[in-house]
Amino acid sequence: MNRRHLLSLTAAGSAASLLPRPTHAAPAVKLEKGATILFQGDSITDAGRDRKSEGSANNPAMLGRGYPFHLAGQLLAEHASLGLSLYNRGISGNKVPDLEARWQHDCLDLKPAILSILIGVNDIWHKLNGNYGGTPEVYRDGFAALLERTKAALPGVTLVICEPFVLRCGAVNDTWFPEFEIRRAFAEEVARGAGAIWVPFQAKFDEVVKAGTEPAYWAADGVHPSQAGHGLMAKIWREAVGI
Image 1: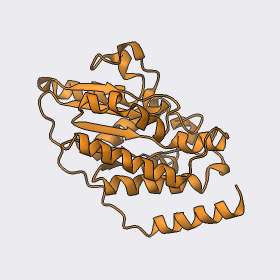
Image 2 (image 1 turned 135 degrees about the horizontal axis):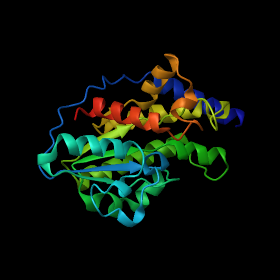
Image 3 (image 1 turned 90 degrees about the horizontal axis):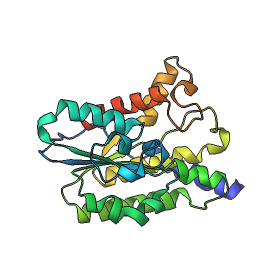
Image 4 (image 1 turned 135 degrees about the vertical axis):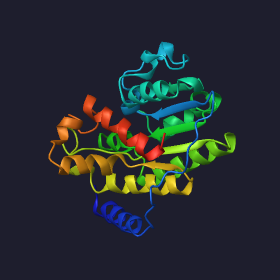
């Protein structure tokens, strides 16, 4: 990272820190009969889901092994009379531009009542690996445009934006910072601008690590959650969304 780019990131981070902080209080979310809930994102959401069954709502193989699977089991059990349809359309390796390219088929056509998006780790990880050139501003602007497109097509959708997170172990080292923090701040800015519910994954993972568990307990490579990590994500998500 050259000096000019580092200074620009530092300036952006300082500006982001001056933004008013949201309260994170979720509006009342009412689950309607027959509602569709869609989980979108990268490999953290994908979690080994079966592509062949992706059109089959509530299919355990389609939901993968991660937090969408945990959430689906809980919500379907607790709201059996509502006939909910839950889908996982996360794809490993995806960045914001990848979501945009497949958004019509993998999101808008499903007409979700609740749309949950976790995206951002690959937008920096692929850059660090030399496979992508997107800046934090490209991430912010592309994400904002995607949400505007979604709201225009689905005026009644409840947007749930999940905080990108990493834990300091495995693949995550000092080269990720301060840029990752800036991208996290931009994700929060975009969520606030879209009137979305914010799910504070990084904040909560930081809390449990500070309380005494090792980062690798939650995500061995610093990015992909363990079973415990996915379980905690489901808990955090429900607390934030309020269902």
